[in-house]
Length: 365
Image (cartoon, rainbow, N blue to C red; front, side):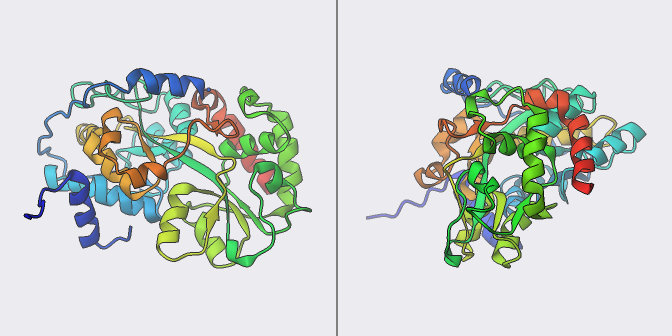
């Protein structure tokens, strides 16, 4: 019997990745997903070889960077001739300085919703060019000046080989007597306030608008047990692997690749924070057209499927899902879980800057 030698876009990306130098509020979201499930394939605009020789795109390092390079950056360069420099990590304050000074060195800002929406409120992003970027096939519609790319899940990471009890919910993570151990959290206010309120007994479907004062009081209780405020995303896994921490807030997209690489780490799926990742093009950039072309490229269903095969994200392009393997789908975050939440990026867009400043001061006092 003759072997089937046909290859999918995902197969091609896997080959490229192997050849490279790198390793490998809820109801509204679900209603949008259902309404758009049958949307036709995203229109992929013709990509011309632009004059820009390179663009810089923010990133998050580790397995995420490897997947971005294999699914997006590398193929984009191959198709357009435009090199992509990945810069770790996305920081809204630094981006704001660039825009305000009109000296912009980051051409595409890849970041979480609270930062992206806050930047939009402050007028930091270019309007998405509809002649280049087609958004009609997205599961979740986003802003006029930014687009959602994929969803991800964050939760409590731990090493099961160490024995003893480990927290599986945020209430247990906050219970340092029942679950003793060295803890690590991220130094950004979003996600932390949600975890604090869930730990304090707020029901997931009653979380927003956040009770900020109650959340900071809950943060006061966990603060003495936080051994490290983790700056870079890969450290949410490596600090457990190196036995510097016992429990961290981490991400499914970090834990499963670490498992495949032989690291002993697990993440509780009993309660997770689910979020969208976004792309925006800052104002006053030197390579705006090339940046828009990169955004359009990242929204193509074949590229989204290839990316989500490598890391545990769910694509925001409706027509990407049929291209994703059953094994990858089984690893994707569950947006139906009533114990978990979807981060409310609209709420954070109005509050992120002031609360991040307060949170930074709180960490240092």
